[in-house]
Image 1: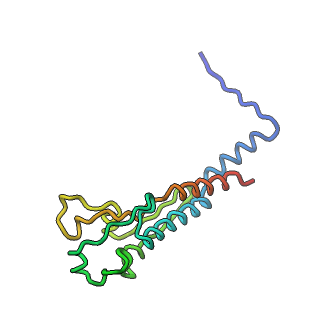
Image 2: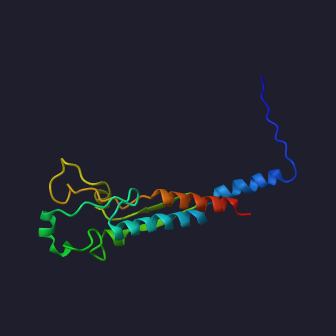
Image 3: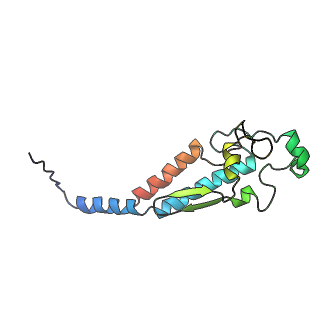
Length: 152
């Protein structure tokens, strides 16, 4: 038994479908905008010291840590040094992707937190999420994709 599929076109339907397929092969323009949205969410998280996803405030720095690092008292938690975590955040994008991150080896432990079994000090720190997007950011991202795909 053989199956056949016939494609019937009316007017320029085949050309329209080809144009749509071509638009999906290079999404560089909207991916660049999406990377900017993610970068903005991260910058806001650092400025407000809140999770970009939930809006929950970061936990306070421990008294022991503040005693050892007095320059952090009353200041920003992760934004103090010009070469620190906040300054290391970079967004990038390509034809089918957008990303944001840091080249700092300690970036992940700040975003995801340490585990109770980790040694006290620099490893057993509380989660201070700075990567991610809110529901509003997700709506903005979908709007960017929709606008791009609906352009003539």
